[in-house]
Each structure stands twice: as structure tokens, then as C-alpha cells.
Image (spheres, rainbow, N blue to C red):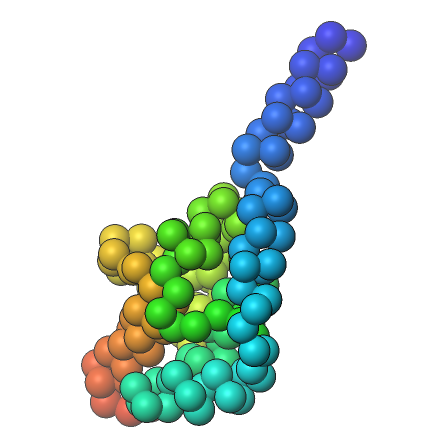
Length: 149
């Protein structure tokens, strides 16, 4: 009985350590809420298209990063800094990077695990450019285009 109670306590404690800080998430969303909301299509046209980011990469970043962070991406700009402005580590689950890399693999057939974990990314825009570069690297290696699943 004591062993089960101790395991339950440790599980709850671990869960709290690994889960997102909902207060920080709410504060980030509140700080961003003064900006005009833009749709995924507007976000692509305004920020990604001028950088020649593939539309599927832009859509993936917009939806998946919102999913992992709980931050409303309708208010996020490419210049927003992941740590300083969006408090990324605080607002995401502790294993978000692993799930993100798996989602990228499922969507584009590109394994970004090693470069992603070792590449210094400061802003949302840098992250989107990184994703596009990883996809393009595979395309140029294979000599043909990579199809999304």
C-alpha cells in the first residue's frame, strides 16, 4: 500500500515538472493579444512567401507550433523570440521537441532530430527557415521533390 501511494505521489510530481506552465502560457497569449490576428494564409503571404518558404512548411509550422505551445499563432510574428518573448520551454510539454520531430517525419519524410536538437534557433522565423532548409536539403539530395503525406 505504501509503495503504491509513493508511486502515485512521484507520478504527480513528475507530471507537474514535465507539463506546461499554464500561467506562463496565459501571460504570453495575453501579451500577444494586442496584435491583430491574422489567418494562416495571411501569415504565409506576409512572412513566408517573401522568404520562399514552401506553403506546406509554413502551414505545418503555424499549426503544429500552436499545438505544442498553446500559443495562438494568429498573433505570433516571425521576429518573436522563442525563449524571451514566447517563453517556449515554459509553455510547452517537456517532450515537445521529440513529438515535433516525429510529426515532421510523418508529414515530410525528413528526419530533423539531430540537426534540430543541435541547431541554435532564436526566433520563430529562424525555426521556419530551418524547417524549409531541411526539407529542401532532402529534395536536392534526392534530385526530385518531396511530397507531403
